[in-house]
Amino acid sequence: MSAQSTRKLDDYFKSLLDIEGFSSVDVSRNGLQVDNDGAEINKIAFAVDANLETFKRAAGCGAGMLFVHHGLLWGEAPRITGNFRGRLKFLLDHNIALYAVHLPLDENPRLGNNAALADLLGLKEIQPFGLYHGRKIGYKGVLDPPIPVEEAVKRINFAGRPPLGVFPFGRDLNRTCAVISGGAAGEALQAIAEGLDLYITGEAGHGIYHELQEAGLNMVAGGHHSTEVWGVRRVMECCAAELAVEGEFIDIPTGL
Image 1: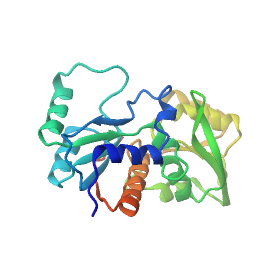
Image 2 (image 1 turned 90 degrees about the horizontal axis):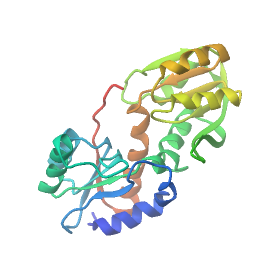
Image 3 (image 1 turned 90 degrees about the vertical axis):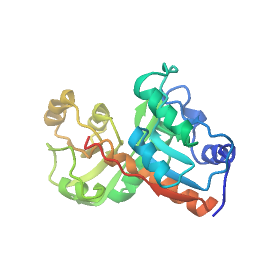
Image 4 (image 1 turned 180 degrees about the horizontal axis):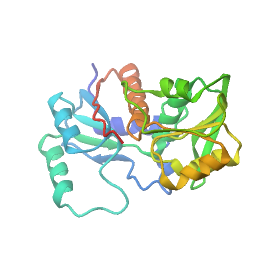
């Protein structure tokens, strides 16, 4: 295995993911959020969320860095109080660096959550989809042969966990499909506007229910966590292959 400094890892992750390109539209403070004391890193833990339980498991497996999709820092710097103080103190006490990548990990065409979901579904003729502050962060494509909603659920399933919701308001067989992981129920309106058969995201939304029903669009809410395990796992595999750095995926599902 090859030890790496946080500076080298920061350069590496920025070479993989368009971190700077999303700085004006992403409220996440993407990149290195908490540094270590300069110690070299032999193992990186990977997880969806930055929280105390994840930090404890990262420390327990001997990781010197934790790479997450949802970090600690969003928008303006928070006050260092309460749970935030406890989380930050744990990272500093255990000399664990924290690296977070939000929208750039959703959008990436090779390593991203949405690219992985498109691959799992077997989409063909893949194109960008889902305009968000001027950037398309999801993907759409063709299912050939067409598949029922139930088959789509099976293909994106992670660890045998059921989806949050299935809304079968459209065709029995779906030929066109779009995917945006996480909390993107509202982007179903873009799928409706484009005349797609199936839309897959992480969370459902009360306000979108009747829009789906009246437009005849099938939607699967696979779970925010479950649809966003894929990107961090792909980055972990990339680190192992290209940097020879040991990685471990920490799975702490929220059920949401």
